[in-house]
Image (cartoon, rainbow, N blue to C red; front, side, top):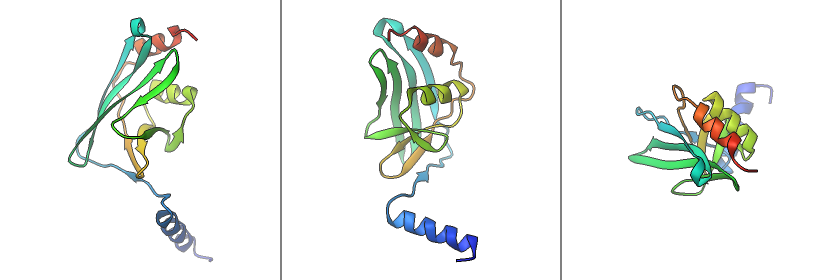
Length: 132
């Protein structure tokens, strides 16, 4: 196939039929998020609320002395710069950079979390202080 647009369309169609496609939610409302640091509970993280369809999804991503914990109302995963990530270092870096951070669900939905304007310093200090 010499036509690059045709090839891209064919690949997208095949990926969609095989379940490899994903959708990014584009609602008018913005997500809300808040970093927290609770060293007495041994946990530092991010709580978020994301508008989706006719409601919201609430969840959190926490760093604990036992590792990274994602809490969502259904099974999901962390997305960094458009790709699934289970790397604590990569996720921590995206949170500090306050960009490229999202959660995904196994139905193919990816929901970006807006961290712009948040101060990650207390959260970062909390994570560094966690026992290893």
